[in-house]
Length: 251
Image 1 (cartoon, rainbow, N blue to C red):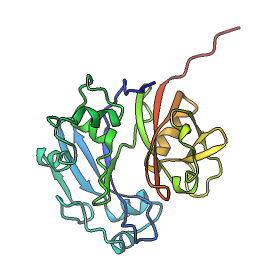
Image 2 (image 1 turned 90 degrees about the vertical axis):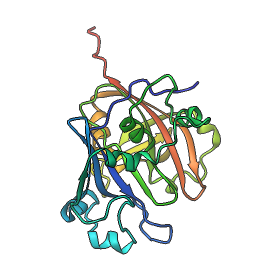
Image 3 (image 1 turned 180 degrees about the vertical axis):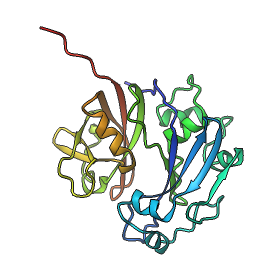
Image 4 (image 1 turned 45 degrees about the vertical axis):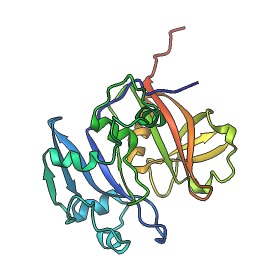
């Protein structure tokens, strides 16, 4: 059965993330800046300040980021706290999306569970696809919003290489349970994704806080839809349907 995004929310902001090259020992994605739409119209991009980089990256520092070879997003000179505003900002990121006139555009949308009948905004498509490219390590991440009561999401799991080397192909299409990983020493908001007793990975740490807040307050159904990447570095995607939790009927 095909799963399609029916309730698509518009992100308030998107976090610019960067993954260091394969040769680096720490491949956990860095949060380096944010893209927002001021008053829902004018796009603005800014790099995080030195202190924000520490706060957003579990104590990792600007110096460590630079030591891995980070020099900034190609369109914007990197200096902590630098900001740009205007339509050129949106265009700089929009180039990472394929042209809607391409003959395979419908297939591209379907890969992210977006039906061709849905008219999604550029900002929505950026959040859904994450604009990931294998060439430069950049992507954008929607941190989600705890106040959303209804939304459909396609989420890439993190930390999967520890669990997914031997996951059978027939797991595709199976129900995924999202559970709070109580006592996680690295992230108090960590959310684990599982099929039965098999661990798949974690919700991206930039999204985990919102998902952890949803868990007791929303009805959440998740399905493993595909696994990209390699055996050593699998990239599983789950379809997540968030709806209001139904009140229990009185006896």
